[in-house]
Length: 88
Image (cartoon, rainbow, N blue to C red):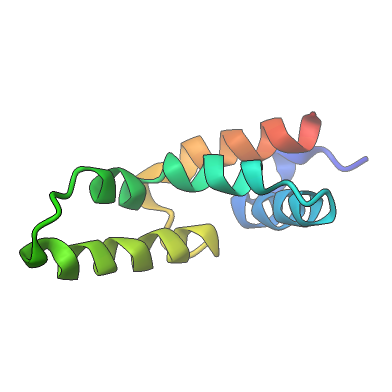
C-alpha cells in the first residue's frame, strides 16, 4: 500500500474519487461539496434575482474545486477528507 501522506492532494483526490465512484458513494461527494467555500457562499445568498450571477459563479467555483482546480484555502480541509476517506 502506498504511503498516502506522501501523495499530492491531486493524487489523493483522484484515488478518493475512484473509490467513491466504485462504491457509488454519493454521500462522500455531497459531504465534500457542502464544505467547500463556494457552497458556503451559495448558502449565504438570498433568493433575489440580483444574486443569481453570484450564485452561478459560486457553482462554477465548487465544480472547479471538485475537479482539483484552485483548491485555495480549502486544500488542507479537502486533503484531510481525502486521507480519511481512503483510510476508512
